[in-house]
Length: 143
Ligand code: THU
Image 1: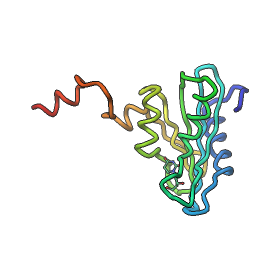
Image 2: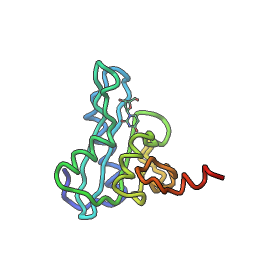
Image 3: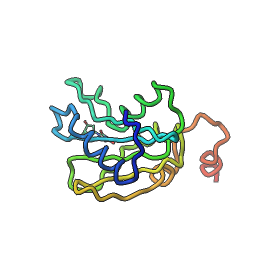
Image 4: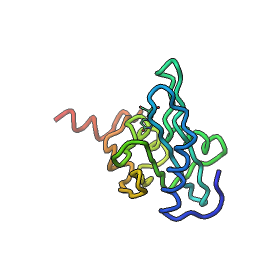
């Protein structure tokens, strides 16, 4: 956990650095994430693969689970960086897990060069799974 205040560029840099910790012997694709709490702390994560491939955990969820297990619930932003050449967009599963803690969390999708694009979780995953039986989705599907 990083407790010194980080600006946007610092959060992006933390995600790029977290990527170095990735355990990705099967895909060779390293991902790093840095999650900013409302209180200004930063929890980092990397992807952790397994020989039973489906047990792999993405970097974003590692960061989020670390933070929640330390008592954090209120998040402002997450930066994600990968080995890929393009801006790193979180997978749908990670967006669903992030959305549990706030549709408004800002996602900084980083390139290798440290450039980034930013979108809110709600923009990347506009219709997510919900246990509500009277959700707007149900209304839409009835029409
Ligand atoms: N991965 C992440 O860490 N985050 C994502 O949002 C999508 C994919 C990881 C999982 C796996 O170790 C590697 O990238 C290739 O899929």
